[in-house]
Length: 326
Image 1 (cartoon, rainbow, N blue to C red):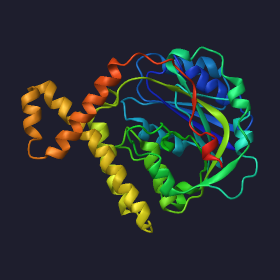
Image 2 (cartoon, rainbow, N blue to C red):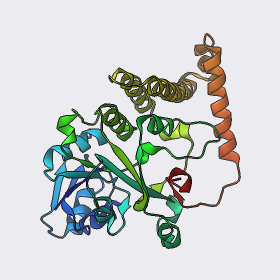
Image 3 (cartoon, one colour):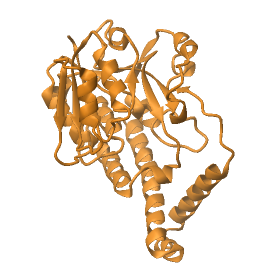
Image 4 (cartoon, rainbow, N blue to C red):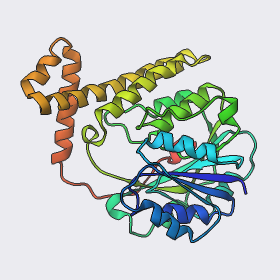
């Protein structure tokens, strides 16, 4: 058995059963470690029922909510297998995923396959098997500069944030590179860990084949995350520049990434201030920084236009397409 699967969960009773079931169906799995982050909806009972006494299940229930990064770190301390894989509690794995990823275990530290995103309203529909079958068995290295660039939000750019990747990685890296999830970060914790790993020399490889299914939820950016979560991600993004050995290009891209997150923070703060003290006070707070105020207003306009646009037809999408594997 080669892989420990870690599943942090919070109020995931409706979805975690499939995550656990599909993980346990993989022959390479040594254990499935579920960390229930103080759920109130019976998540732990669903996990026990699905596992049906399988000794590979290891279930931990936190007495207080500590966040996804703390749950991941706790799970990592419990495992012993040479490889580790994270699975979100509302996602699931396709058959044979780990057999495909682990074929030829040399030349990489992180191996990430493609992800099929399914709109939430389509989650009970059959998978588009033809789309998955057409994916070539191609692999290529991923560098830090490309990784950072693909996580910077830009208007009009197709969504393809590589921070969504759910790689298999070597457990020994945690000690060799002094890696752990930043527990004050509840948003983008995977991005921060992957960036640190690559900055410290980890070899990251992408595979075009797909073995991971993720549910994609709709909603404007401004309404998806708490202000404090965006602020913590912003600080973590800034701190990545302290990593030694970064190239000038990598430092420049990290600076751009931090600016893009800072823009989202300003947007959320403006909305918070408007809610608490009114529009005039929110505008007054940014009067001394007209450029930030202009960007916030532009982002609000974009959100409102998106909210009033005719609903588009929900579609499945792959994180990586043919252009990513020339």
